[in-house]
Length: 343
Image 1: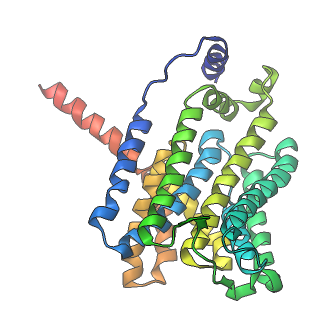
Image 2: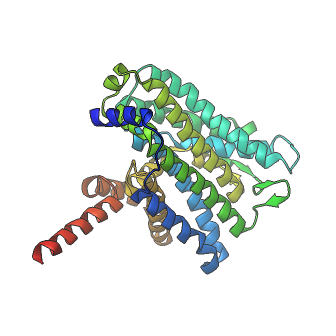
Image 3: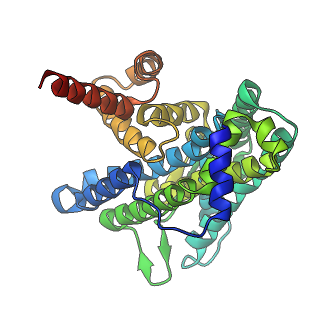
């Protein structure tokens, strides 16, 4: 922790220097390039599915920004994803706004709503000193409350049936209704958020968050406004989730309480854990891997998926605590070291 604080202080005083291209950034570039080529080799149905997967990956990235970098687990992050989706749906379906501007207004409402709720909740619990398991419990309760509101406030949210008829996302003069256009919209949003997160957190901000994660009290005594930094990170994380939820609703055309339910909050934790929390690019890979696994299991039996995800999460914690990519990297290094020793 002390080393992280020393680096943070040094980076704040030193003259600006060029940042190195780190392994995570290289992996992110390769991944984005490969995904960008998908519409040239895949059918529209596959492209449409991957549009949704990329938005779920953006959701996972938002959670990793907070959980992975601060060590504080939010178990109710589907609240912010669902707020983004419902904000978009209510604006475009209920408000009667000009269709040319309704998607932009819905996007703004969804993101602002998610960030505002995160600010209100985060302000009281983070400034109140709530951390660790207690923070997890509070956010879990938040997701349950949000789900009950989505079900019970049927005049606005549509209740159990949700809201149908959310139009595809568009801006004046440009429509993203086609599968390929929607795919590139999702990929573009994910890429911007991913590379901005990597760029910011590879600098002084990342070092400060690492210091807070290791010893928040010591970081505070050295002059860092830890509660403010955690709150800002939490709100940014929620805004990313809200952005993903809002665009996701325009792709599926409807919203339902499932988008704000506990199961989705659990699934996103699994996506992040599979890819490796704190890596930022790992959750994107983890989301794709778990989605592929879900597709194969659900094709056999849809009811088996909740059981499979629970079992998979237990095995993940026991066998791959740092995520599958990190395990494969360590395995490759051991194999390379073994070959070097024999030679």
